[in-house]
Image 1 (cartoon, rainbow, N blue to C red):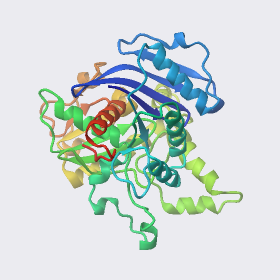
Image 2: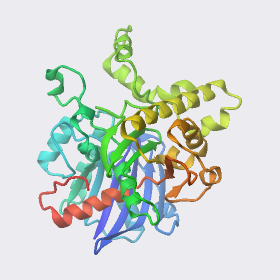
Image 3: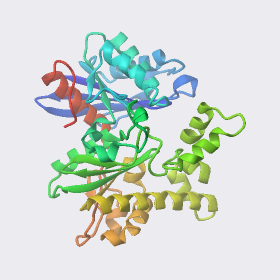
Image 4: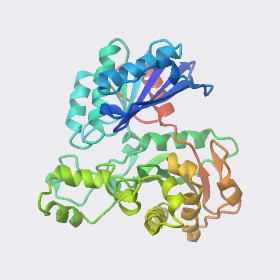
Length: 402
């Protein structure tokens, strides 16, 4: 069975091809197509051996979603892979009514369109991609995997907002995101040789978007993102949690609209607002001479330490896992966060933290009361696992996170 996984962003599509046989899943190719919507097109595409195949595709056009999906389809053909037997998608928000990952039917598509009001910056692109892929591959299963499903195990006190019942009844609650990443961390931690699976752990997914999730027995019990991916800790272009009065203040400014305030909070805030760019690597390179870069990084780390400490006080974790692009690759951020958690017994092993080794690894001293790990986020592989399981065992296409 060949599974094509599509992971859409606001201006790019990540895609991967997996082969499944007898319950084993292996990667065959992966790529990323940037420049959606008329931006400068850029394609990165490699096979499982790391060989660059992008040059074999010739001109790449992404002015429309139809053209972009056509590039993905051609890329799979260039790699010598057969058409997919199933397609899986990362979808940020399922809305207020759907639980579990879903086989895409007309009814599910209708509910996804309704869910756009919860995630107007994320879900529309996913819906467009799903519709186009279903047109091209009408006879194979199409599975929507939601970033929220992993957090469906949170207790009510962790999801409810202290708002009037009439508001809560519209589906306004804490959903949580980065669930596929967190689930992949749990999967890897369970499978790791020589690692005692922590009954309680915190997962810090740090990338352009950032969140911290508390897990007990491998299940989500608390997380920082809420109704949307805008809240929680400070992020690349999002402010994280702010006084709701700030939003009211912004809405009262001359010329302000819902769209303009939403754009500010999602695209012009966070590290970008403080340091000029939303790239932690660039901020690290500039921090010695640039006071704005230093401030941005100090605010970022302080936000993380404050949040992690609060969750640690609630859930008494024995492990903290760093994942996501920044979490996996920026040793200085990991070191700064660990240094701020000394009261919880975090003792970083410097050489391990600065190592360029890949894969799951421990970066704390053996005597550290709070064990520290780096674990790669494997969202696409997690989606492929769900797709394989659902195609084989759930004819209706509905499934809960494992």
